[in-house]
Image (cartoon, rainbow, N blue to C red; front, side, top):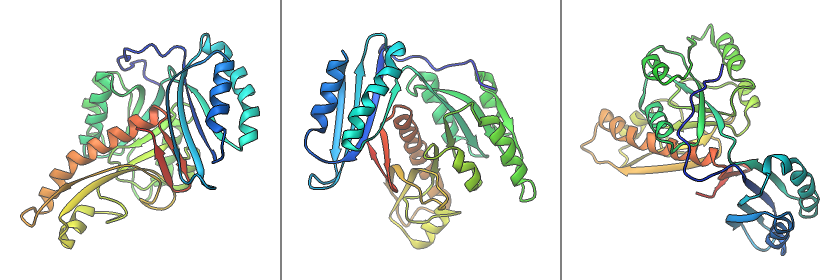
Length: 297
């Protein structure tokens, strides 16, 4: 089931806009070849960002936004033609339509702050995506979600029912969403589920990873006596809290702050960090390389 409610559209007309992401071994002529290709196909580059890990034998990354008249009709041929250029430079690449909003499924448990932040960004038009559904192992958030026209699915999870619950979740999201957002969803996702969404499950972890992985990180931080706490948005992999990091932020704390204080301060960091990461992902600003990311923010 997909909601028919969509966010407010941004002011820019994205009908004929496409985004190209490229990573490849660095060598002279990459930018020239891509630019020439787009020029010869009548495209107009409106934004270009690039990064090289090492000009001598490293990897090169580039993100380009371009406008092309009659994009929908020409996109498949454009991709077929670009495959020739890509093969010459051994590129990993994608071309996506900017007007095609990514469909999100938001998973949440009992804490609402990250969900509320995403809903607010979506309602204001700052999150250029469609929220297809919210799935929760508790029924607490239904009253926040359903009045917005977004389907809400309550799927309880216990140790005995976890496999069946995840099967039901997969039935709901398969073919219906592009990205899964774990907005303080306090359950571990199985490898089988992750296989369906490689680098398309974004989690918010309430610590500055790699510090304090696992459960109760604020209690861990308090017991360690840290002076800075943070939050980390990352892609989910089989390694617990070990996937490629998209965004992080921190705030100073002191010996006067107890565990509840750290949680309160941390909630503000979590909601901001997750919103940034989700926004960058849906705007095709993230390239994953091994267990790292290049983010053209």
